[in-house]
Length: 394
Image (cartoon, rainbow, N blue to C red):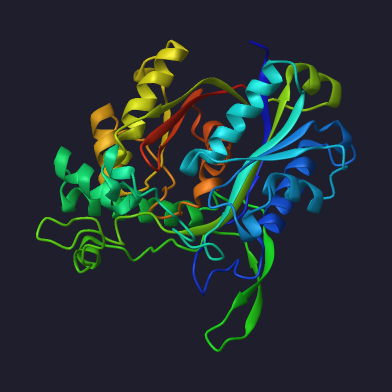
């Protein structure tokens, strides 16, 4: 395999989808263009845009401002030369990570030297389930209720004995860690400040510089969460609530991927190397177990053990599945498991999440002094994805 590196990364703040989203008036392709240009600038390629070989952009629910190949549109709106092509990658919640994996694979094959990879999601403009049309024959192949991610979280909780208390505890931890990291300025270097027209309660807008994540709730306690009713299955066994589930969000993130030869030629500084990647399939009714299957596969491909990993970023799509996966993997109490929060507190902007986590890891590894990190997430409709990253920066 060729020597291929992530040399730079950046993300937007993560807005909380809905009528009060900080990014209500910012299109997904414009949001993508902003992080593309910032990643290029940080890498030192602002005056060398013609050397970029491709834009691979993650996203799902590909319609409206996420549609018509947002990977190509984002590159055009970013002012890239017309010679730079673009495409869109959809592996649901792992779309952003898959775009990075595809970029590395393409460079490894010798088809490119420098690629912009990342992803975006605008769940204010395209709410979850918009224009979804599940095949009526699904029941012939799987539990048709699996189209509801919340339903699958309940299935995981019930099958694997994840209690409501365990789920709420993870949610409290997530918000506390995210709030502390924000207060300490630990997200500052990875977030691109964006001037946005933010909706006000009276219907007007107010200019605001978005340089943090909108959904963090520092006052979250076990007592406040206990008052919330189950959302997806409302029976006496229901445990999955809005409080112990990830949010719906608007955000974008971009990384610059380059070969060692391109790094030497253009003065790029290698920071992270992908050691191994794995995508797996699981029973769609238990979608959330994906990381518990994908992580061991990625570690095996890397020839590594869990003890070799110093930092874990396992996305909290739902506390039910995140508790199960981290418990199953034996890392639930690891001191660097989602150290700055995850999907429950920061948010889960589907097509962006994989690139957002990679961006966060790029800033976390030197800060915490670790050499190897794992990124993983469950993926809608019964999948999981995981990547093993190595810090190679100086």
